[in-house]
Image (cartoon, rainbow over all chains, first blue to last red; front, side, top):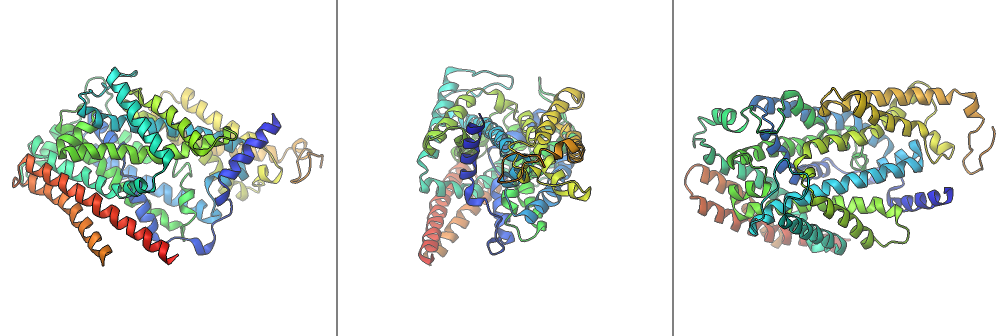
Length: 473
Length: 64
């Protein structure tokens, strides 16, 4: 068992070998690098769905405008004050820093959790693309309440799209990658142009004199459609804040900010977040209202800007699914000894494609985004505590690295305990709000556990000196 | 020079995509005209922007 774990850990380390060392000063990137990165990353297929769902959930106009503004600002501040400072001090990815703190065993579990979550998200993106292509074949989009595949046609179209996405990911045509990289600016324009072109259908006058009235009565009118819960200001605010929880509070974007010259570069996240989440969500809300609140991204874009719009949805789904397929494959590769990259990508693609047949992920995307962030957030709390709080309390840092532990059991206890808290004790709180008290809980409990363990005499006797076998000290 | 032309073409294509929606909103284009314009501008964007990106990579390779 120990031998198997060691082999898996060695393979995992090997995968990430190229960025094992802290980023050198001469490799740091200028601000425009981060501006471009964030601008491209946060305008994706998910935006077609999320913005539309705010309309379906009866968010009112001012709740949306204010909620998104405050929530996105909080997200930017989270990148700025939580993620970027740790990244610029350590110059490491979360993988290598977590390994020092939590041990390679727990890092492996984290990697696998990320892989599974990415597969589900990629599956949702395939479903989004399917709404576009399905129109060409007269295949209806699933209903909001559908959990299982709604028709044979839907299954066939999602399997077909998922297969093509997987094959393209395996073959890795450079030309197609280049094609995808130029898609981002155009997809952003699809959102804006689509919203503008949808306004006449909603009765907005060309002088915009009645825009506010239409926005408050036809689009964000505060009335949820049947079967959907009503969301208000706080829901919108917290959603906008945690939409990228795994990246900022969860510290996944250490991979980006380790190249930043200064932690202040965390502010560049605002470019992506306000252009993508704020603007694109508003635009998709306009488009869904224009087609009668039918959750069908393909139809939304097609009615707004024509065939190019449907193509835009298809492309947005692909450009979002492709990197997630790659990352999922990377994580799964640690568990598949001797498998070549194409086999692992095929496995990840197969899992993702099957998941895409089930419309529940796509139709419950808001809840899934909440669960995604909630699941990975405790690890961010552990790292935050280890980095900032433990040294200030005189608690020894990086014990997993120093004593050669495969698992930092305190970190695992905190991860599991935080999730138990969120899904048992905090059930009276709306799902969107649970992450914040859970985050505070995780930081506190990890700090207390590390303090307790570090001061235990019995523990100190069994410290394992690096490079030696376990021995009494 | 060619890179500059491609960049300009790409930028104009993207601008046409956006501006056509505004012109349609103001009532100067029919629905069909707007969607056709958007489609043509989209094709122009992908052709020119992809070619520009390809040239940019070749340039980097020749320097390296």
